Length: 454
Ligand code: F0G
Image: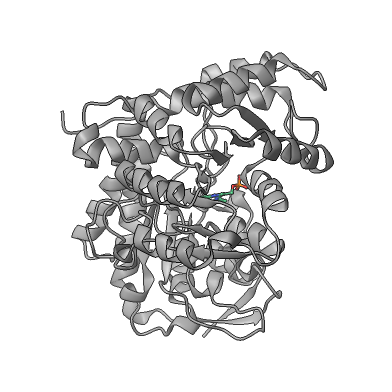
């Protein structure tokens, strides 16, 4: 059969409050045209993020009941640790309340002024946590990533030539090399296993540890199985193990590929580094066997990890995004190609060529989609990245709108509705106008800035 159906049945439902265009126009005005300021009850399809928004399975819900809330040495920690090590065999597994807490701990230990951390593309919290220590975060993704039309299969790859050059220049200042799978900031694009191997070879040459930002590791492994001939007949679970066998450590947000609503971890092999990280953890998160989580959260993550490597799930998950990208592309809505793992990215610069970057075409598309269909996406362009620390603005490299699909939440007819709305918006593109920012904070302005329609 050509139709890849949702490999689950719905047992419990959450009602969606339907709204009209007129209502949404009022709500937008009240929210100063910032979609983060909307109440989620006023959103029909919420594609703001795929983080922490998954539906948990019946098995995860029942595991919650088994959560043991002992302060130290809870069996829930050992279930969690075993589930992580089943896929990612690191010696030390340190739970945290979410991914950025793992980053903050890692960089508080290895970062600092004068240090440089390369990555294919740092996610914004990773960059933020590195820069908060005075260190520098550098993105070294392959050039193909910048071409939204290129069908290059692994647009998340690290440019290993540039990495080697950087290490030749300043190896002493580089404590670790990172690679983010999939490359979220670059469109949810995967990294090939060959590229991880090549990156590891460069790291070995300079005796540098390789750390993986692994938020979407299962989606990345599925792409490897689909697109890297050598792995066609290898089980996703084995691909995952091979990926992590090459790393010295990882940071993780369990809010993505572990189907949990909260959680994360830092895992690594180095005993001394683990000791420093645990000391920091006790200050900021909690005792090392719960790290800012309840025992029940650890149980939900343990079950989620066993479910996310299910290949029927991954086939459905990735096909959903591909299906949407194919339909939008066919209808002339400019989208990033090929389809990424967790989101559809609309290329707003191409959709609204008459709106200059600093009138925020991505923002106009995101607001337009909400107004038209009650769909909430997220601008990833000059609103998010355009503000310099000195208050001036530089247009972002791309003006994208991310429609991130929560895991196991929306059905195919809801995907069809999203497609229909995006096509309808494209049809009125010529009449759409940009935005001005009327108030903004000094940093991370996209969360709280106020806008006016031009
Ligand atoms: N790394 C990547 C690649 C991410 O996508 C995220 C979160 C984090 C780290 C931080 O994890 O949220 O658990 O602290 N990304 C979310 C998103 C927020 O919407 O893309 P966290």
